[in-house]
Image 1 (spheres, helix red, strand yellow):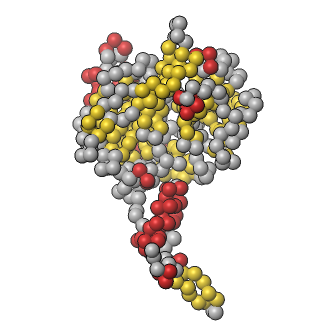
Image 2 (spheres, helix red, strand yellow):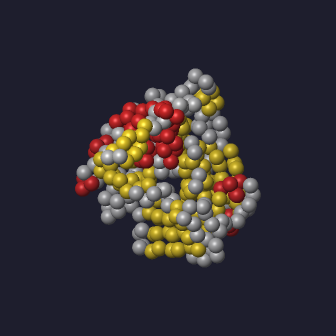
Length: 377
């Protein structure tokens, strides 16, 4: 227990009693800081900026932004600029916008690495970068500048099957269509998985490795892979007589107490759905620490359905009627048609879900659909 006399000092100014918040005990400031950080990284940064004492009493995120998952900016989403201004476009002068999914706040961050890097993916606010000249993969914390080095994608070129890719450039293009997942062990060991939907393969590596390694198994076709809580989830369509959609969970490699590789898990089929329930799938999206599946039940795209993955796993194939308890929930659901985000003009679907409504914006045709979840209309 902290003695009451150390919690707060009272000061008198012109006969009026006031509270001297700068006199809070160091341990108490540190405890409050961790509570603030559990909400949002930006709030924690603002908390530390109140005064020198609070700054000195709390742990700075710089240098720990990747190694300590508590400092991951998981509420922040990289926001496309539109108008052909891809990340790294000269007109943006190395800056990139981020959007807070909880508060709706926008910030613009200067990222010099975008001059010679492409953005492959974003996980929990961290950016997965591809360095142009040597294909090195790097994990960047956009707010602290911390970088973790991962092996070059070129280390996988010799394992790409030739029948599907007729030259070196097309093989490299197949490696650029990727979704990533990152986990940080208790020892600070960073493990990443890359799901290549065009190759139907998943590769893994840890920070400091010299090369990526493919898992021996395949899911073919590997459809709509997504990262969620350190794991990958993906779908497989079983056509012809079976007519099912299978959902797989892909766990990262298991490490022992010393942080060394001990076991490579196989993907686990966690759910099956009849094909007629999910005729056209938009994507997985995350909301309120849950994974949702957004799909149409017909080719006309006139009826949008939202399913909880947890319900599908339990065998309940019923669309949800409401989402969460917050008055407004912005979903990290910008679906990009080309995974190399820093090159070319892109079209995307933008999904915005509130407590009772879902909005889908089709950027390429300037069309917006609204779904009332309670009535599914």
